[in-house]
Image 1 (cartoon, rainbow, N blue to C red):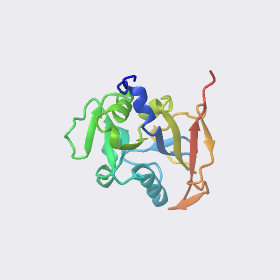
Image 2: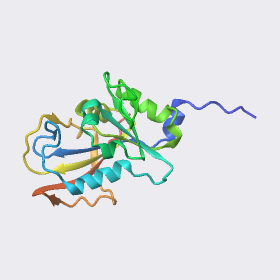
Image 3: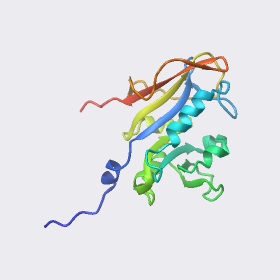
Image 4: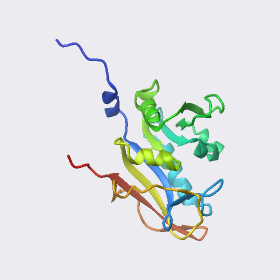
Length: 204
C-alpha cells in the first residue's frame, strides 16, 4: 500500500475557498476613497451588505480572512476590526503584530498574505478569503489566479476621489448571482447597486 504523501501548497489551495474581492466604486471615475473615508455619503444598505458578505461564515466555528493594506486597515472601524469571525491579515512594511488586539498577521506582500491564508497555521479554520483594499492590493488580487470573484457595489453619480479602483473588466465578466438582486437602491439620495463578477478563463 502506497504511503500517503504530505500535503503540498497545491493541496491546501483545494481545501480553501477562492479569494474574493469586495469593493464599492464610483461609476463615473472609479473612485473608492477620499481622505479618511468614502467619496459618497454613508450608504446603510451597502454597509450591511459588505459586512455581512465579508464576515459571515456558514459554520460558526470557522473564520474568514480579510486582506487589507495599511491605509485601509487604519481607516477600518473598531467594530469591524474586532469582528469575532475575522482574521485580519495586513500588508505593510511599517505595522507590527501586536500593535492592535485584532491585528492577527502582518505580511509584506499580497502573495505572502494569500500563502498565510491557505497554508499557515490557521488554514484549517478559514472558510473564505476576502480582499478589502487599497488600490495596489486590489491590483494584485485582480491579477492573482486564485481570485475568482469580485463583489462590486456600483455607486452612481459624480464624487471627488483620491483613491481609485483599477481596471478589471478584461479579466472578469459580470454574472447573475441569486443571492444578489442587482436592483438599484438608494440611501442618502445616492443610487447604487450590487454586482458580481467572475474571472474569465484564460485561453490555453
